[in-house]
Amino acid sequence: MVLTEEEAAMLDGGKGAAVQKAMQILVALGESFGAERLVPVNNVHMAGSSVLVAEEAGTRFVEDIRNQGGKFVTRVTTNPTAVDPTQWREIGIPESDSVLQTRLTNAYAGMGANSCNTCIPYLVGNMPRFGEHMAWGESSAVVFANSVCGARTNREGGPSGLASALTGRTPEYGYHLKQNRYGKFLVKVEAKLRDMTDYGTLGYFTGKIAGQDTPVFTGMPTDPTLEQLKALSAALASSGSVSMFHAVGVTPEASTLQEAFGGGAPQKVLVFGDAEREQAEAALNREPSDHVDWILVGCPNASVQEIREVAEALQGKKVHKDVALWVTTAGAMHAMAERNGYIRTIEEAGGIVVRETCPFLARSRVIAPNKGYKTLTTNSAKMAFYAPGQFGLPTHYGNLDRVMQAAINGVWR
Ligand code: F3S
Image 1 (cartoon, rainbow, N blue to C red):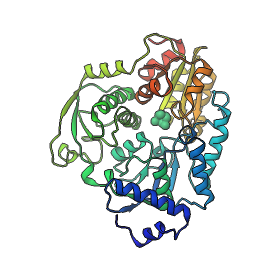
Image 2 (image 1 turned 90 degrees about the vertical axis):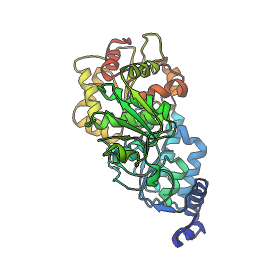
Image 3 (image 1 turned 135 degrees about the horizontal axis):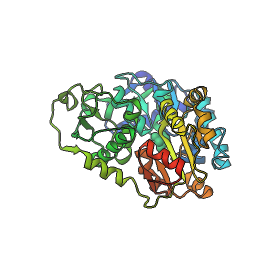
Image 4 (image 1 turned 30 degrees about the vertical axis):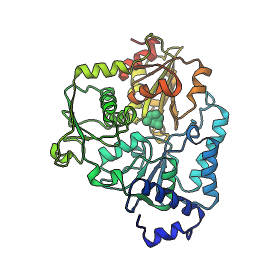
């Protein structure tokens, strides 16, 4: 790789041990992917911010960097943690995680991170620009940033994100290069996409076939909501390793089919019709009984609009006594929802709005047995995909109406 004078000085230790270590990580990463140079970045979303991922060793690694004088030189936002800062005990998060999480969060904050602790940084002040080079972790946010915003990022892990935050650089390969951003295959959407969950189902269906390839959708409504696009982004990155999609007439690098494919032809053409939607939805419903005990709304983290919809569904009703309803969201969304009265409505009905964590990044393998949860019921394709493997809970999957009926009645219909 060709380095600038400044980058070479960083690598030689001229800017301290923390920056030197960071530059070594970036150069090794770049060389393994055939990058010719580094590109400047001023926007990092840090994936390794939960102690479920970092554990003691990762936490100590981040603390060591801070103790060596590490300072972030870019805007840095953080992904969800393993802990709700105020309700962790009540929802069953182990105290040891709370203690360790405080250390990790403090270490990132001590270097200059904005501890927003959410997978929707684009809704809490870190909105990517079109064409902006970034170093983002969190697969759902990466797909959203590349596809919906037209920003440029690979899917960064904890160490490479940290290294970019310390140096303001990332290796130029993958989605930073225009030639790697074109579509590879076409998905003709013939099914009616009725709600956010249908977008998630489309993402699950497509991701399973995609591997790492970029899909191009035609036939999608031209006015999807932000919530629908985030559901699609998250599901694509779950059943597949997709980092970007195009939707013709919707996303900024796909004003035409030709633009989406860079003038080339699709390698294959698929159809997503009503039959495919029903089959995909059935595949995410892995719990044969109607038993409901743990319900999750907010993967990716809920927007204020989604919190409002949950509050409206619970107006004048009660969550069933045998059901725990979690709505997971960012602290900033929680504050807005609180001001609008949605939190009070949900809490008075018996639900809980969880901040800064989610079942995937909290220690659900401990929480679920301690609380007696045997199933997970959700409107999120991403959560429905991961729950059985990650924390051993079979899922009920359906749209918000169906999920809220289950919350109130205590059975899945
Ligand atoms: Fe976000 Fe957790 Fe889902 S990080 S995308 S709520 S699995």
